[in-house]
Image (cartoon, rainbow, N blue to C red; front, side, top):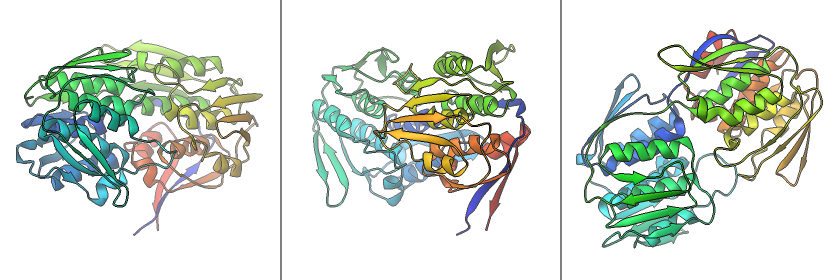
Length: 427
């Protein structure tokens, strides 16, 4: 198997216009959710990323007819779905496959699912998912020897469910199952992220009754059946933030199109605090954000929080940006443990970063990072190394880019269009 990496010749200012793709985190939940319909759903604005392709293959293994040959559009016909056992290696290799738990349980009242994998960024337990399914009346058991979860119910009955922690995955997963439960379900202490709202909007397009997404409480009136629909995925909040940070890190001037500015307020605020200009606009067709930076960033403090706070998925790119701050910046990671795997790689580039209790980083800025051979350990760590390489002097080789391919569509081509010197190489 060929090994691929990015060769980046840093120090080139990003300038121009880039268009954001569909949201990865919404797409990987909406694709499994489509099987609830038992009819044909057509999804548009899907990003061309590995996770979407992997979900296509998983659905086909279950007997679903999937047509994904026309640009960013996927046609999912789940009338042919015959198998509620999702046990393949593809299922266990990606985190988002767990949305099949709620989708298959909701439609068929039974499911057997290989426990998911994905990026190694902490324990990320699924106990809140299982708690929600049990509250709806399902018998749930974990087979730790085979690494499988089984759930079965004669009937799913609406319930009031309070999540012990705010969890995007659990919020969406239980929402999927509850859509076809009997009676009313109330989900309390839920996640408010934009992709939670997008999934709820999709479910409503299929005939579900989901109210309150984007607030602390979601109310669901169960339906005996749902129907097919067409739906366009929202723009990717994290890709948008990555390009915003990359523009600032390279002293750039970039217009970022196909965005929802309200989703980006936490990132915009921190970039402006660091000295960047963030301008919101509307060209008559799309909203856009323009990010301009002309000096070393001022040191700032960043604390990751559930939406609408600063997103954990942008903590790592933001750290790469702050490596050049004129002073000492502080980053506090409150969502996931082990999300500082990129620090060792940034240190290879000359970064001065000290860690405390594995959740706080002190970043002492230097004038510029220098190119090095560095290795991604997960998707967002990979994005941070790209940002670092773009801003660094000399040549940076970013390895393990299969992690980056999971969540960014045509990243090298988009960056090249902005003037970056980045090549995808293989051997």
